[in-house]
Amino acid sequence: MKESPVERLISTNPDMEIWWDSSPLVFQAWVEKLVKAAEPVRKAELKEQLSRLYNAASPAESVFRGCTTNPPLSWSAVQSDPKYWADWISKQSATNPGWDKKQMAWMTYKEIVKRGAEMFLPIHQASRGRFGWISGQLDPRLFTEVDQMVHDADELRALAPNVMIKVPASMEGMEVLKILTSKGISTNTTACFTLPQIMGSADAAMAGIKIAEKNKVDMRNWRAVITMMIGRLTEHPVLDVQAERKNIKLSWADKHWWGIAVFREAYRLLTDGGYASKLLACSMRPGPVVAGKMHYWDLQKIAGGDIVYTCPPYVLEPLFEMGDDIDFRPEIDEQVPQDVLDKMMQLPYCIQASDPNGLAPEQFNTHPATVATLELFSKGFSSLEDFAAEHMRERVAAAA
Image (cartoon, rainbow, N blue to C red; front, top):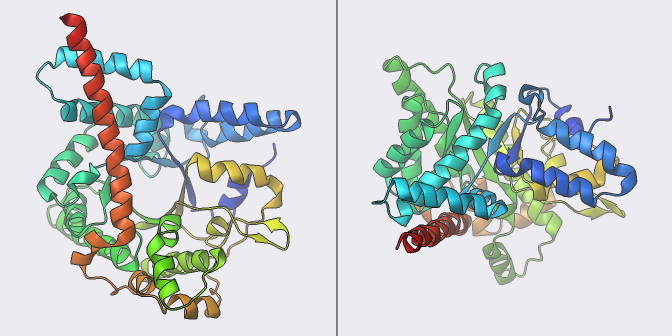
């Protein structure tokens, strides 16, 4: 059995976790597509390696330790089998004739999360609640509505014992994180990019733990992760706009070194501060090419940490293509080149993200990367609502 690059990455720290970043419902179809496209000489080995990521026959033996989803990814799960979900919605609509498209879309979304949770539940059970979590995301359009977010979180949490709630890193999201933690509900901060948001999330969890302890809430199966979306931070257009104003030339390497620097500092602060939350890396991008060799800095430069990587197909596909050509060693505690930091820290966007006090909580909601990501996530829910409305109408038309 030859180790995959994912397994070699994990070997840099035994406490590292690799999660699947998509609905579990599409995993097998993705494996089949990748194996089909591979060179004949690679097919057998690749199939074996990919099948170890999520072992359908024995899920508890999987390389994956958890799963993150978001509304666009859940919408993709529907698109992967539109006839099935159209029929499902039609039947549900007949059972619940008074529902509108928003209620039907929410019910459909919960069903997708529930089925994914069932696939990862054996991992959760075998690890006694440490692993096997799947994230169910709150409606990103409600990122300022504390009471509604808490209400919806309770509904998602009730789906399965291994559902953790994906909470936006908005000002109001910090309060939701505290409330959910106080109730023993596991959380995953999302749409999160900056040290202020990361530390605000970590502090909110600690405050929730104190309330839970006071109220004697069972916290044995509670976990919290804080997602930092590295690629979405470094790729936002405002970075180039600010650099151009100062006549600063930014390379791909400059931007990603800076994203790595923010992640490394967040990891240091969480570790040194003894926080209960674990840092999760998201939105990694392959590159750069150095001396004719392709690298994967967003993965490599934070290797060796007690962290979580959540990996969608667009992260895993180039990683498996690189295969044996990519090297992993513990690098998370190393220094970022000072000349890169000197350049980046001339830009307000970078200062705000890199300083734990760079943003006040009321600025979380207007951070450019947070705004852009919440808008993208919102489209996932809107698309699901439109799909639900279409097939609810078809049922009404058929009954007429």
